[in-house]
Length: 135
Image 1 (cartoon, rainbow, N blue to C red):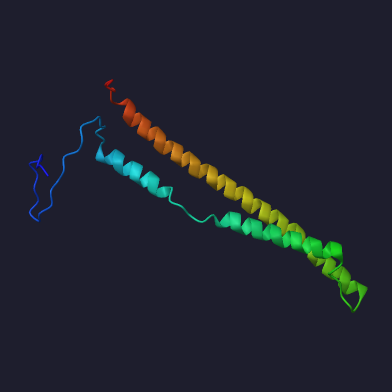
Image 2 (image 1 turned 180 degrees about the horizontal axis):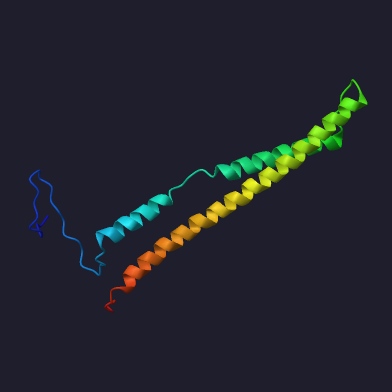
């Protein structure tokens, strides 16, 4: 293997020269800014989506129990009425909170996509700073 580079490290590592081509010199502050923005985009479990679907599942299963008559009390009709009121409350509250969780999850995803487009915009600003030389 020919040694094209004058660089030699003391531990026996050989530093290879980069291939010839066009490159953008970028300020360290700009590079750090881009790294910070990309780090903010790291994958996170969307707990809002998970909770939203779980709550909607609770609402639907309780609704099915109400419709099929599975919610009843053997003692009195008054306690059956109380059970139905609680069951309907569970259906309504679970459905509303679940829907809000899902809406919030989609809004969170929109924000994440917006951050990605901001990073691309910053990279395009850096590209425009330099005149491209046609090949």
